Length: 237
Length: 237
DNA sequence: CGGTATTTGTCCGTATGTATT
DNA sequence: CAATACATACGGACAAATACC
Image (tube, rainbow over all chains, first blue to last red; front, side):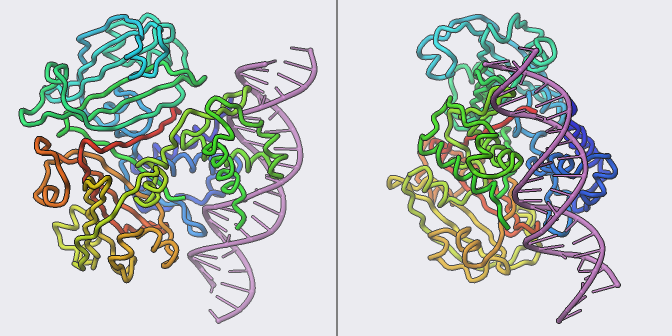
């Protein structure tokens, strides 16, 4: 498989991130980029389209393609990236603790919450994310056992997605995400350094599917409200 | 301009929303769709790509294109849609009150918050969104006066975006959005029906730009935490 | 102000690769 | 092995918005 347009997308993105192109700059014209990369215009436009979706660039009809003022959303919570990828990007050094890793079966009440198949075996784990000595995120994960086989604490402390993609050769497809606010539970109070006057946590619920469409994961990321930030980019159609 | 692919996107989207296609169904093959709409395959693929970005469909190499189980994100808070569009879509009947509409100048401290140009004249308004007799969202808006000309209370109660696009013939381009949690201010307490034990609000900050790139709006949507929901769809690349 | 060149937007047709049936 | 279906890429054409002279 060729996927030239992905390489070009990554190349241009790198040049923006390394400030070879600055916000407000005009990129070379699409025809110039065609000559530079030795590809057709359709391929260039596919690469530029990816950058536009992420909020890195904006095209103006008849004028050119301009670099936006941006912290691209893939660096924040937006986009489907693993926690490890996000923290590496942002440059913040997180530590992950795994106080719990066990096997269980999806019972009816769990099925309702997780949307995972009733009766399926799953790994159930808690992961606590520590920043600057404070525990600010509690991840409650459920992974289908027959998909994410042989999960260990070491893998969970590093990156489960990396393990799935590189070791198990699985293809992650898409995720639905819901953000809301809930009262803090006793588990939140046990694992997070909550502030005394804050009886709430921000909850990000993730329903993650493989490329073939089957859901293999449900995760609740429970955030200390004062440290929660989510950024997003949207275009008008 | 033709924009056949937009029409096809809207047509297929409509068929999914009206349950002509159900979740799990396979759409006709791309070649069948070409024949049906009388267009080339590239045009069909552009339409399908829009649906895929919104989380309505998912393509499987060699198998077909399948309808996902979904409330598409444009129906919720995701996507760049006006409050009126979102509420019409969700079917919830909101009422909008406009307790304040005044003109002001962007001073240095406002410039820092809103990112609007220093010294520019702006409309400043409060809009309270009421649902089921409860005031649950306080919108604090700043619109550049030389862009959104002649703004009135009537327009603000209906839809400012509709006014901009249909009356002023302006093209809205893109927005950056940040979601976080803040302590409730005295204004929140004045305008929102906050619950007594909830000293916080969920704040959605919007930096909205015209198609030509200039920012014309800053809005803070301040939500009662227990009524706040945000949904999102993401793909792995 | 007008004509020409440049640049992005849309669409077409074709060819080839790769995954599934 | 062949047929089907999606993925990638090429090249050409014309439209629409803008820039330049």
